[in-house]
Image 1: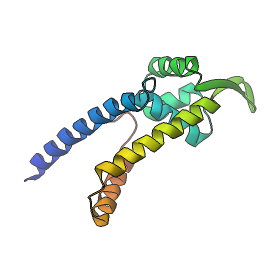
Image 2 (image 1 turned 180 degrees about the vertical axis):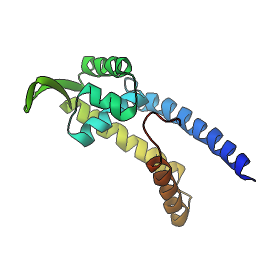
Image 3 (image 1 turned 45 degrees about the horizontal axis):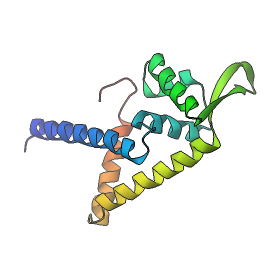
Length: 145
């Protein structure tokens, strides 16, 4: 396989991976899309942030983030709180329900990955993990893919 064929295979397989991830997100929690799951994860990691920060971090349109956040608010998974450092700013925070559902979905996703990779040798897992980190570290927001 030459470099062009390898890149074509990578593109095809990453597309299949993304489709599978979107489909499995709905099965793990019907109200939690892959985008919603990702936004909740970022809110947990960051300890909360503004919707505009989410849009900038994921290179998403503000209206897309606004729709997702509104749906998460209606589901009572996130809430807006006044930023203690700047009372003009609203910060998105996970609710208790949001934290609980995020943990459940994360556990389910982790179990699914473990099952799918169960027969891989440890050195293959380590190499694959390293390649994914390297690939994602080289990515820039707004850049495809």
